[in-house]
Length: 391
Ligand SMILES: NC(=O)c1ccc[n+]([C@@H]2O[C@H](COP(=O)([O-])OP(=O)(O)OC[C@H]3O[C@@H](n4cnc5c(N)ncnc54)[C@H](O)[C@@H]3O)[C@@H](O)[C@H]2O)c1
Ligand SMILES: [Zn+2]
Ligand SMILES: [Zn+2]
Image (cartoon, rainbow, N blue to C red; front, side, top):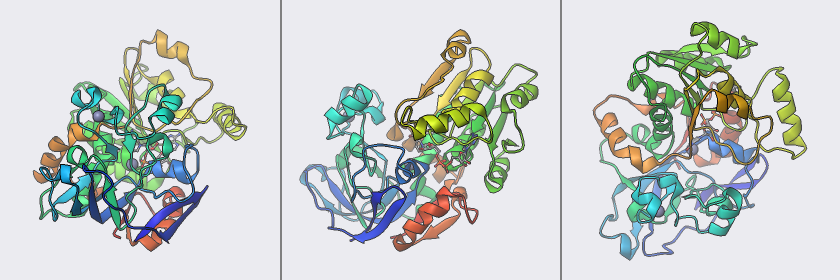
């Protein structure tokens, strides 16, 4: 089959690789009908996340049709079923899965010692996302093996477009969880940094969950325009040298109650001293992550407020304002998304027409165009906000 394969920093290729096969009784194999490129993939493309090996198949936002079923998955799935594959692989049986904490499933990371060493305790296995989280083949390919499929899969009805359902894999529940974690009250101002696909979903979720006001920050005009169309007031950080002062002005000096980081470890900044420092630290391997946005969130958030962090961080960071965080009594909520915790509810909202997550798609291409689209998406060229691939 054809698949998008990681060959090194900024080197993704469309190659012919062996077809996946059933390896365990709980597996299924699907024929991929749609998959997408995620901002998280960019951390691998740019090689800020450690743990990739040359030849790894990329991709963790995938859906398709079941073509082969392992013996232990037959009670739940049959050939021809249409499924969405969450990016988090879950066993459905461990202590964490039973509590709904699916992204920290204790059993699905088959490289548990690596996960333990990296993060203190293992987290869930993820598709196409480094050997720290299992080294599983990803779904930017013609076929995908879904391990633990009887627990992991989300069955979806026929008759609804792939484009409406595909983002149940990741970015829709991720934006939703980011907003839910804010415990939004009708009097709250929610500020979302980053208007990529995750930020777009977080903005619309915060509005659906009843925020009084949502403010969105980015510098890419078409992303800001999309945020505005979703109901946010917008700030272009290239035109606003002091984001913290501006947000304080907009909130009578008190700061927003809730702050969402939909940017993660590759935060940009124009001219800020701390951002230059982060670049130097990253270049000299003294720190792995650039936390410019996190520092702004901690400084501007109203005391006793909430910081919700869906943006991905991989390792360690420096100049973290722990004093402000502690003394202001801020609550930090973060994590890879517990996808299956939210998908029944979100599928119902899609079916009822409350939201159609396909609004975010700007590019639809074939697999062979994948390598070029990584660059287009990373560089935000050609108005690119979200790329869907139809293998
Ligand atoms: N927690 C999860 O489960 C989960 C799931 C999916 C994605 N993510 C993460 O969410 C983040 C966003 O993903 P995406 O697909 O939207 O990626 P993206 O790269 O398309 O979006 C990031 C956006 O942040 C903006 N940005 C950069 N620096 C900024 C700054 N200083 N202030 C404001 N905006 C800034 C960029 O211009 C860009 O539009 C990534 O870190 C990704 O890894 C997390
Ligand atoms: Zn993703
Ligand atoms: Zn589990």
